[in-house]
Length: 486
Image (cartoon, rainbow, N blue to C red; front, side, top):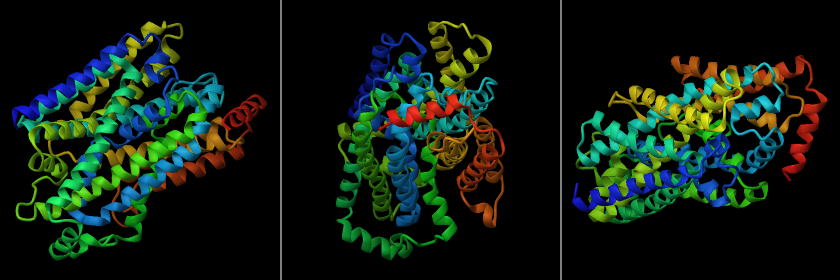
């Protein structure tokens, strides 16, 4: 690691901390801390949503999958691109409108309680518990990815690398809250986008061009150029089903709630979709080029292929920026996850159950303390250096997609849905994912989000239809939110 690369990298880290300090001065209420006062423009909302979505998985897990299996890994990218577009197309506008109409809800548990007028607090508490459960695993995946970056780039011991990455992320999330997270994610998203254009282009050029790369891979591993190689119908469904996860990811859909206006949704959708498509396929092409470039000295850890390219193809100053892009991918997801988790603690547990009269300043500090506590639990889970980023992300993504996806979609589009249906659907989705993941063989090899999503949807519909319909007040609010969304 050269001095130039290290200097560039440190400047980037200091810049992220400076943003946190700047927005610390602008954060006075819990709404500011967890939703930024609904002030995001379309560009910041779209790119920060994409950056918080993709995490280290985009620059570590997906290139690693492509390095191992070739083009058949593209099914995940296709599923995610479709899912992200549909999420922006159908969920964003309605959720932005409904969350404001329904008592200005600032978190997903807050929205669900207000949407169904749930005085029992059960929807709020169960949904907050689900958030804390799966985000702990999700955050842990980011900690593993950050440790791998510092370990491979700077030669640190795994545990030391883990703590360095965690301290930087915790610091600016602790200080600046949602606006700091959104603006750092925006900057990080631009860095990631540039890296995912530059690195695959340079890598493919270095190995002799696209035609040579395809010919060489077909010689080394003929299955590498076949998108159907090694796949089954169930396997393709499982990979494409990653797209279902978008509808239930709290750290992504809160960006919809934070937009300045529903009128910003079309522009944000265009920006977000372009970012997503180029980023996903840039990651796949990077891994594909790695099959050729590293053919004579195969990588011990496939998930470092993008990282290795940055160090062998570019001068030290550029390498430092590209390494910062990898850290950006990791940080942009962890900070969003920590923020959503801390808001669940402050708004949905502390205020809702223990301190109804808590001041805004008090709630902000409860949120900040929760950031640190949750991060430490995630660090403890990430202490195993053999942890797979992709596996940890897969579990958490499936959990959120199955638990919240059907509940969010039906709450926005089906007037007849009631509180009982939402509660049973939420629990069903989460439980199915946890149980299914423990089973294996035959049908159980199907990605757990698929049965979880289907059974959660059925549970919502059946329970809503066999129990009392929603009140006139809830139905009138539904009509108002629908009207204001368009």
